[in-house]
Amino acid sequence: MSDIKFTVNVDEYLSLNKYEVDESNAHIELVEDPSDEEFDKLILVCPAALYKRDEDGKKSFDYAGCLECGTCRFACGDTIIKKWENPQPTMGVEYRFG
Amino acid sequence: MADFDAIVVGSGCAGSVAAYEIAKAGKSVLVVERGNFAGAKNMTGGRIYGHCLRAVFPDNFDEIPFERKVSHERISLMSPNSNFTIDFASEDLLKDGQESYTVLRAPFDQWLAEQAENAGAEYICGIAVEKLIKDENGKVIGIFAGEDEITADVVVLCDGANSLLVEQAVGAKRPPASQMAVGVKEVFELPEEEIDKRFQCAPGEGTAWLFAGDATHGSFGGGIIYTNKDSISVGIVAGVEATAKGNVPVYQMLEDFKNRPEIAPVLKGAKLVEHSGHLVPEGGITTMPELTADGVMVAGDNATMCVNLGYTVRGMDYAVASGQMAGQAAVKALDAGDTSKAGLKCYVDALEDSFVMKDMRQFKNVPNFMEHFDRMFCGYPEMIRDMMNTMFVVDGSPVQPMKKSMMPIVKGAGFMNLFKDVKGAMKAL
Image 1 (cartoon, rainbow over the protein chains, first blue to last red):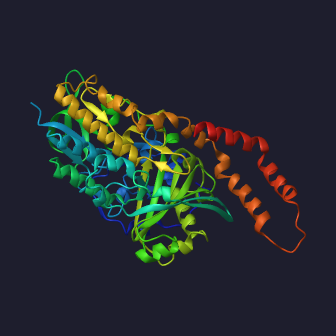
Image 2: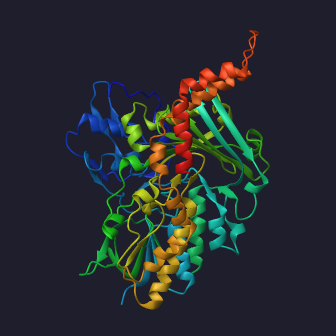
Image 3: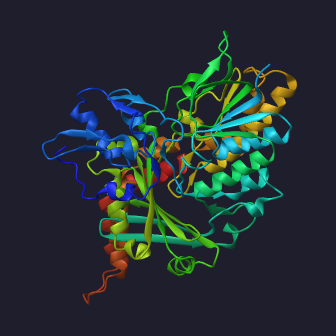
C-alpha cells in the first residue's frame, strides 16, 4: 500500500453518474480478511476507486459506486473476490452517455 | 415447444444486430438486456467503423445516431515532459465504406435495439440473465431471468466482455488478467462549435486520438480522446495485470492525463457529466472461446473479438459483424431444424470466411507483442523527445551536425532494441 500514489477523489466524479443503489444486496463480496497484496491490486485497477485503504492501512470496499465493468473479477476472481454478480433487476449504474 | 425460436442475451452491438436479423427473417426472438434500456450498462472509447453497419442497415444507415465522422487520426508519444503528435487527415478516411464514427453507447445502442424491435423482436430490459437452462444432454434450451424460465430453440449470447455465461455455455474459463484491459472514461460537455475550433474540424467531423507513454505513466496501455457531437470523451485504457503490478491507480492515470499541459487546454471550461468504466478483451484469438455449443452461439466482446493495435482499437465492428452472422446462422439452423453444435457450424464457417476471423488470425501475435513492447510505453517517447529537442531547441550555441547530435540519442535507446522492435512490430501487425 505504501507506494500506491493518488490524489484524485473519484467519489466526486461518481456523484455525477446516475445510479439506483441496491442497499439491501451487495452484488460483489470479498472474502473475509483479504490479503494486502491482492487487495492492493484492486485499489490499482478499479476505475471507480471503490477499494480503499486508510492511513492505518485499514481496508474498505463500497459497491455502491460500482461501474459493473468486472475488472476486479478478472484481477482477483480466483483470490479475494468471493462473489461477483450483476446487480438485482433495474439496479446499479445507468449510463446516460456511455 | 419452446417459448421462442431464439433468445438473445444482451443488446449491444452484437445482440441487437443478431436479434434484428432473426426477427427480420420472421422468427420469434426475445432479447434480454440487463440495463433498463439498451446501452445503459455499456461504454466505449470510442469509435466504430462504418462498413459493418452499412452491411446490416443499407437502407437507413443515414439515420444512425453517430456523434462525428472521424476526419483526423492522431497518435501521440507522450513522455513525462513532452508530447510528439502525428495528425493525419485524408479524404480516404471519409469515403463511404471506409469511414469511421465516434459514438456514445447510450444513444447508439438504443437506436440499434429500436431496429430489432421494429423488425419484431421482443424485449425484456432491466434483468440480467444469471443462468442458462440445459437439457439432460447438456444442450442449451433457454435462460433463467429473475423469477422466469424462458426456453428457445437457440440462444445467442452477446453479454459482453464481462460475461458470466460464456463459461456455462461453452466451458471456457474467463481470459487471464494479462489479456484484459480496463478502460476508464470521462465525458465532458462542450458546445459543438467550440469542439470544431479546438480540434480544427469541419462541422460534423472529429478526431480519434491515441496516446502511448506517460498517459499510463509508462505502463502497458494508453490514453484516448474522441470528439463527440457536443462532448469530448477522455480516457485511459490500461492492461489489468500491468496496472495491478504498478503503483499508479488507473483513475489517477486519467486525472494526471487530463492535467497534462497538452490536454488541459482542450478540456478547459468543459463540464464533466459522466465517469465510466469498461473492460476491453484485448486477447483476440488467443483467448477466444469455442464459438458454439449445442443450442448456443457467442458473439462480440464475450468471444474476445477485439484488437488493440496501438494506433487503432477495434471491437465494435467485429461485434456488429459477428452478431449479424450469428443471427443469420440462427435462422439457417432453425429452418433446417437443427440447432445442435453441428447445425450451428454455419456460424463458425461464416466467421472464418469473413474479415472477423481473418483479422483475428492476422493479429494473433499482437496481444503478446504489445504486452511486452515496454519501450513503446517508456523509452521511445523519451527518445523521440530528445530527437525533437535536438531539432527545435535553439539556444544560440553552435549547431552540431545532425548525425552527431542524433546518433547518441538513438544509441541510448539501443540500435538492437530498435531493430528488434521494428521487426517484431512488422511481424505482429
